Length: 105
Image 1 (tube, one colour):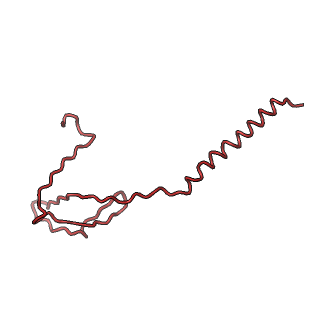
Image 2: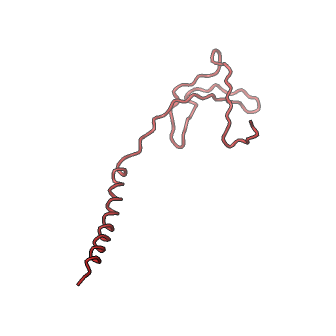
Image 3: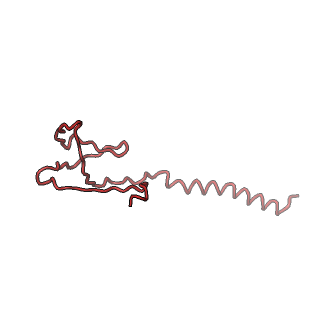
């Protein structure tokens, strides 16, 4: 003759052993089928400075000469404006990195 408490405990343990893996697997199923959303490229403006070696003049650069990459992914250069003539205004940028020495200011 078996003890009813012992039988109830075995039944509860069996249900827990079956239910926990089942719930955890079915909870993950919706995320397995979905691809992460792709981030669309963001337009960026950049000032590029080129200097020839030993004071030699650099040849003029064209949009086709520029390669833009992020990781292994290559992006298209949509516009390239040389800083000459009416586009030769002064541009000044200061980049302060988080890892800079605190005495920097």
